[in-house]
Amino acid sequence: MAELHNPHDTLFRALLSDPGRARDFLRDHLPNTIAGQLADAPPGIVEGSFVDEALVGSQSDLLMKVALASGTDAFVYVLAEHKSAPDPALPLQLASYMVRIWKRYAGTGTARLRALPPIIPVVVYHGAEPWTVPDSLRDMIATDDPDLAFLPGAGYILRNLRAMEIDALSRNAALRAGFITLRREALAFLAEIAGSLPEGTDLRRQVLEYVLRVYNVDMDALRATLRTGGHNELEALMGTIAETLLEQGEARGLARGEEMGKVEGRAEALAETLRRQLERRFGPLPRDIGARIATVDRIEACLDAVLDAPDLATVFAQDRPH
Image (cartoon, rainbow, N blue to C red):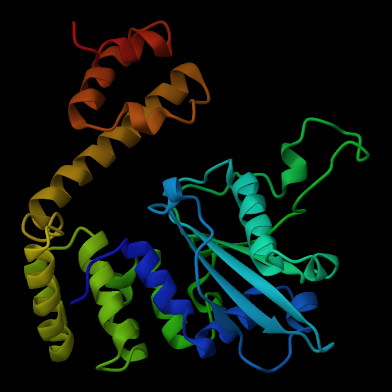
C-alpha cells in the first residue's frame, strides 16, 4: 500500500477524480440553472491544490474544467470541509483560492486577464454540527452600503451531506456509497456499499481503508458482520489494510477500538449532559465550548461545579490545576 495521506482527502479525491462520477456529481449537485448550461462531455480534472498549507488536514479541493453549451469553458471548484464543525472563515478562504486559480490560469502574460473563465464554487460539508457560515463574503463585510462592498467572490453553492436524504446524495451508486462513508454511516449501510462498489476496484479498497482509519472500529464485530453478509472478499481485504495500518502507526482505532469506543462514548454522553445543564443555567454557550470539555476528567469537574457556580467562568475554573 502507498504512503498514507489524510484519509478525508484520499477518499474525497478518489470519489471525484473519476470523470464519470465527477459528471454525475455536477448533475446531482449543481443548480438546474447552471447544470443546464453544461455540455455533455465529462469534466476534465485539473491537477493541483489551492488550499492553504495550514488547512490541508481539514480541507480538500478539486478543480474541474467543464465545457459549456455556449462553446466556452468554465471551472468548477469543489472545496470539501472536513471539520466536524463549520469554519466561519470559509468564505474568505474560498475567495482566496478562487483568486489563486485565476492567477494560475492567467500565467505571466496579459492576454488571458481580459477573459477569465467563470469559476463555480461548490462547498461540500459532512460535519456533525449545523452549517452556520455566512452564505457569501458580502455577509461578512460590515456595511449595508452596496457601493462599499467590493467582492473578490460573490458566494458559493453549499452541499451539506449530513442534512441530505440518502437517496439525494447521488444517483451514482458508487458516489452515494462514498458520501455515506464520509457521513460516518458506512456500517449502517454496509450491504448497499458492498453492492455499489465492485470487487477489485480501487474505490472499494479506499472506502474500506477510510472506515478503518477514521471510524472507531470493533474489528471482531466488523469481521463477523462481513462474514454473515457473505462479504468474504471485504473481510480478507480488511485484514490486509488493517495489517498495513498497524505497521504504519495508523492503528489508533484498530488495536484498541472497542476500548476507545467505550471511552469516547462515555465522554460524548457526559459532554451532552454538561451542555444541557450549562445552557439551562447560563443560556447560549460560546463556540469554543467543545475544546473546553474535551476529556472525561474535565467534564466531571465541571459537572460537579455547575449546580452552584454563579457563572460560566467559575464552572471552568474548577478543572484548572491549583
